[in-house]
Image (cartoon, rainbow, N blue to C red):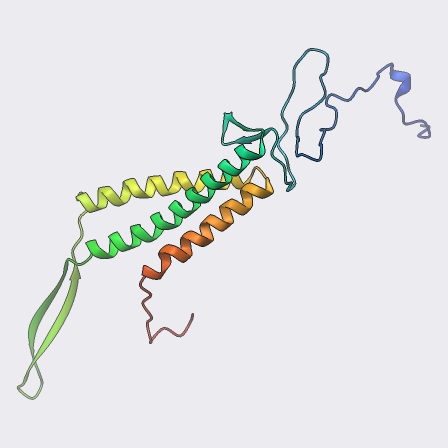
Length: 192
């Protein structure tokens, strides 16, 4: 078998590109393809980081950023959403700590070997599955999960401005809310 001619030209096939490469201009107009003749424009997802403000879809098909003002507004909104996420995480921890105040100490007398009576204390934390605090924690958990996925999807636009807004909002939110977070240090714990 002669393998010198591997072009398959003898089969009568011709190869056409089904999609032309995306056009990118300096203003960030990314992911659009030239008109293929049928008036149908396709959007491609950007797979590298870029700084642009034209044709940036944000979470929903109808939410399209096309001007610098819209990008600034979107960045402010994303910044506030990331701050809210960090505040929600800390608030859930505080709420959980507050609701676990229902701690009981049960003391039982235990006779010692030399006739003395020793008191043994047991700590019991009471919490029920069907309680207002647990239902509230569940609702807040659902909101936290949804917001975290929204932030992840915003970051996955690979738009540099929006990615910076997510990171800056999360950082500022942590700075603003985490100082209230109580840190318990166990002196018997040796693996930190």
